[in-house]
Structures are given as C-alpha cells and as structure tokens.
Amino acid sequence: MSKIEEKIIEVVKEKYRLMNVEIDKLCKFINDHFNPSFEVNQRSDYKTVMGAAEYLTPDTLMDFCRLDNFGLSKGDLETVLGIGKSTVNKLIREKKIHLLAKIPLDRRKEVHIYSIPDVIKVYEQETLPVKKSVYSDIPLEPTDENIAQALYVINKSAKVSRDTKQKEYNYGRHSLCKSAKTRMQNHYDLKDAVMKKLISENRMEYIGINKQETSWGTNYLLLYKMCGFTFHLPCYDNSKYTEENNILRDINGVISSEKTIKVNVKYHDAIRLLEQYSDHTYKKCETEDEYYYY
Image (cartoon, rainbow, N blue to C red; front, top):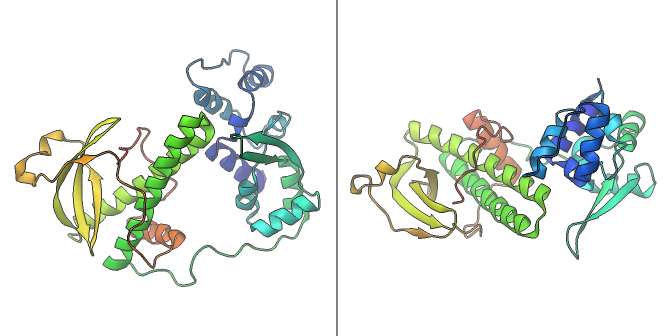
C-alpha cells in the first residue's frame, strides 16, 4: 500500500472532492462496483457523497478515477506531494500532471481538477524539491503572551471560516461550505481545548457571561481574559446566566472576524504551539455538532 495513495484519499475526504462528481453518476458507480442497494440521499448530497467515500480505499482508488471530474485541485497537489506552488505549476506546464476539468464556482471563479494517476506517477518517478517549512525554525515557548497571541490568531481564523461557510452556503457551493465548516470547527475545538487547560492552571481571568442573539438563536458565552486578549468559551448550561456569574452586555449578531490587534505570532506557528501545549490535534474535531456561530 503506497503512502501517496493514503495521502490522496485523506485529502479527497477532507476536501470533499467527490462533490465534484454528478450525484446520479456517483450513485450508479457505487451500485455497479460495490453495493447494488446504495441510494441517493434525497435530502442531502453531502450524505450521499460521504456514504460513497466509505468505498474509497487504496485498492479502489483507480476505479474511482474513472469518474468524470474526480481529481485534485492545485492546492491538493501541494499537500499530497509536499511541494510548493512553483513546482506544481512546473509539473502542469510540462504536462506531467494533466488537467481533467474546470468546474465553475460562480460567474468569475472556477476550480481546476487534475489527474490522480498522474500525481501517483510523478510521486513514484520524479525527484521533487522539498517544500519550505511553513513553521519558524525555533518553536515558540508556551509563555502566557505567546499562547494568548496564538489563541487570537486561530480564533480570528475560525471566524473567517464561519463567514466563508455562510457565503458558500448562500451561493449553493456545498462542498466549499462543508470544508469551511470543518475548518471552523477544528479551530474552535483546538481553541476550547487550550482554554480549558489554561483555566485549570489558573492562567486565565474570568470576566463574566454574555448572552448572544443571532439569526441561529441564543448563545451563552463565558468571557475570559489573558494578557490583554479576551476570549469566549461556549456555555451550554443556561442556568449559569445569573448575576452571581457577572452578567455582561448582550451581543447582537456574530463577533467580527476582523483582526484589530497586531500580533507577532504567525498562523502555522500558532497551531503548532497550541497543539503542543494542549496535546490536542488541530484536525481532530471531536464533535459532530455544529459549533456556536460566535
């Protein structure tokens, strides 16, 4: 079993690349090759795709490659092969990796899908330059200031993904919507794991509790402070909304994703620091429920 095939499948599932395939054709393919009783979920294309993805393994990958529009994006090529944009463009320009399809996202944007068999061939036959690390050479120390800045970075990233999710949903681009939702949840999951550990170590100051009103409903959020930064933690127990817990002003709508504080911590360094501190993996979202849209 090749590592490249495992990596391809991981990316395909994470980025929901089977959403690019026509649902009826995908269902017929699963019927013909794996399960005659497999049916389209009439309520959700996403659930149909996730059901079909269960049949995607290193042994069946080449069978799936017969499907129209099934492949990898340019960004996927970087991830799978561990190379930079310039190397990806060079491989495409030299026709070592071929374009399969151009899928329109809207009137101005489209995603280019590339051949998976070509990617495997390049991996096996080409000597590829190693992509420059996204991390700084020296890992950040888990000081209060570094952790607070790192939390600020991923908190704003979560909110950017939240906004992207809603935008893509409004446009009807469900695969992009689902990807944004997953990124949002992963960021919030890591943030919450870090905050809970900081609170247990008495490294965060409790400020009070906010009630937030959004178009999705009412949320209750516990507010904590650290090194001049403030962060919310979802409160699922509404009975805590009492004067004893210091009720703060109401929040109307979602909290902005705009960065208003300049920090020195870069995104990937923030992820690495918080993962190491909390012993929680960023891409391991532990809840199937949708997070608060705070």
